[in-house]
Image (cartoon, rainbow, N blue to C red; front, side):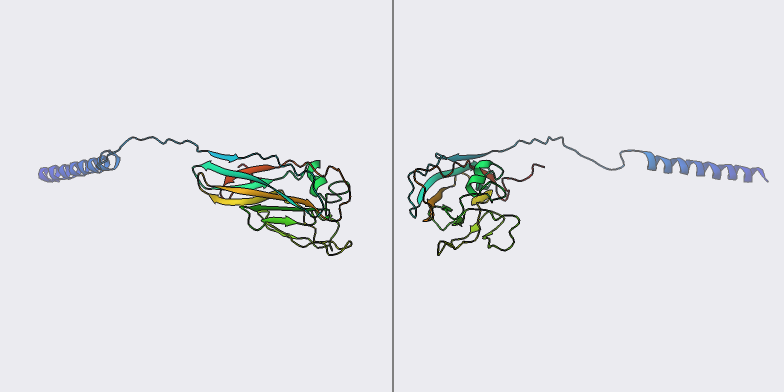
Length: 228
């Protein structure tokens, strides 16, 4: 090989090496694109939901058969969002059993056909009503029961037509929704009606002392929703 050919070959190899170095620099280097950034923070805080009511202790005294009485509770909610309001009973308590339990839930069962119970709002139609305030026994698959939806609304306005007639079993639900989608400051009046039917004969008797709660929740959330 001539001297000129050797020089040309070396020059060609040198050019390849330089090209490879440039490619490597383009692949591994930084700052190939323009960038711009701003630093920020994520800040979070919880809101609140507050229920305001008048006196929630309802005393139905000196009841006479066939003459119902109605007691009222005014309520409103203070919240950043929409709210639902419920009347809630503890169905596992002996007090509830004596009020509305079945024979298997409580010895002798609740008041049944001896009482009338209804819940309404602002003097409107009942959101729940019963003339047989008792849950049907679990082993009873034939006696009629009233319809109550997932929000505790429904019941039955059917009354006994004779001493032996049994209206549909219609125990008081554990949770009865009485208002939904209330805005901040918006309120209602809860009407609770209770009375004795003509079947009741005892005088100066204590009928029931049943704890309950008026509960405000976020709209669309049940008061017994699982906290997860």
